[in-house]
Length: 97
Image 1 (cartoon, helix red, strand yellow):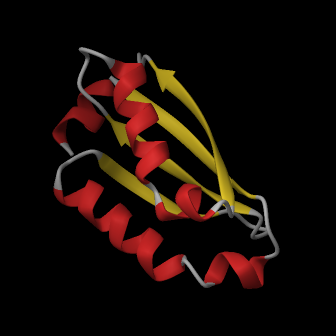
Image 2 (cartoon, rainbow, N blue to C red; image 1 turned 135 degrees about the vertical axis):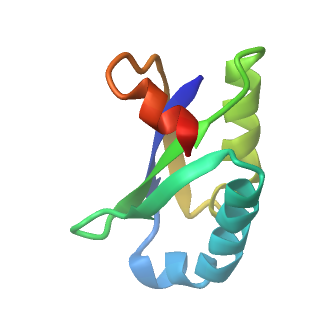
């Protein structure tokens, strides 16, 4: 199963940037596990977006865990909006990543 997450900053950018290194380290860990396919800041910079791949079993629990373990969430500087995504066109391409 795939998912799209939008991470919206809840605090001024200066407060968010204090936690950016920990957040990026967390994302690199997800990438190493094959969970994160891509991420980046939105423009204008009021948050970011993630493309995720999670096991089909308990999708909601996996997505909740990702949200809850992010240093941004733990520090209270951002909130997640996550949608499970049933890819129909291009799924084979994503599966190869």
